[in-house]
Image (cartoon, rainbow, N blue to C red; front, side):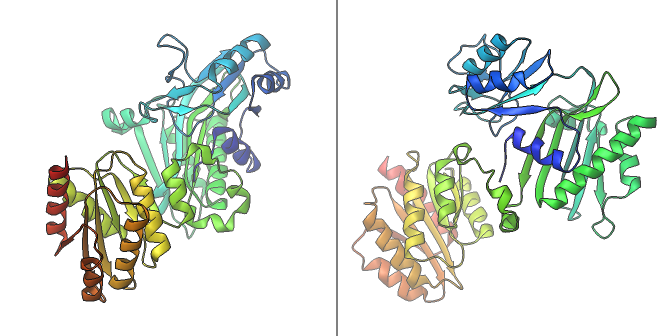
Length: 399
């Protein structure tokens, strides 16, 4: 689960991380009121969407010459003008794709005089299984470009969970950022508090870009992107309250209500599979046969008729879907039960695209019999390769 920048900064501030003063705003009037609470004379009005690259982004409704989603303002009128430009309009950035995201919230913060910008992030290193700190002197830039073009400017340090964050980790971060003396102490302090925040909230990522050195010699977090491990949110009811469902894909949001692991993709073959590994293999073999998956969908090991029906509805809600491939290995989940769910779902949603089903495992013969006697145009498949070839052929035949 991701949260907005203003929520991330409010959360980090509770752990002692230095952030500039700022207030959220849902309207132009609230934005002006927020600015009035700040010392000024410079204010920053920032669009709040779950995507990076806001400053370089463009609003669909304002034309190519309009400013992006991060604006500087010196007066209340300029704050109001920026808010009116952003609220209700669609911001397109490198991370949103061409469809963009509608801006419904703003963050008005105090302006800061910046001497230097750094990059600092905490994430889970999947190789070592530890929390890693990633630091670079190239803050404020596209960090992916920096990593690709000048990887020597990216430094990473893993933290042993047995010891937690230690003074030497702080010194390593300060050294990576080229900071000495009091600034090195500040860098170590900020890093330690970010680590506390990461562990204390079961975060999956805390990205600070930029971590700014101000002209008066202070390190301050100017932008923060924070995401949490969804599997740990049952321990953090307060964090669940920060969820903004308007920022989530409607299909993925609907899938979460049925405990379905669903991610929308750009292809044309809908996939319903049990097991993440099998789902990945299914998507790969669809592509190998010349077409592309429209989604990742793992119904899990305990699927029932209701869950299967919901999965079908979610897949078919995507207008790009031209066919569906169901690939089920019945272990805990019996093939006859999943077959009954497929038949019920296909009848309920008035299935109008080709459907290929491959079943294997517990009660597979019973499952196949249910499908063959259903009276529906369900194409059976013997194995994964056969299923992929058949769904591609069926889609091409129906085109």
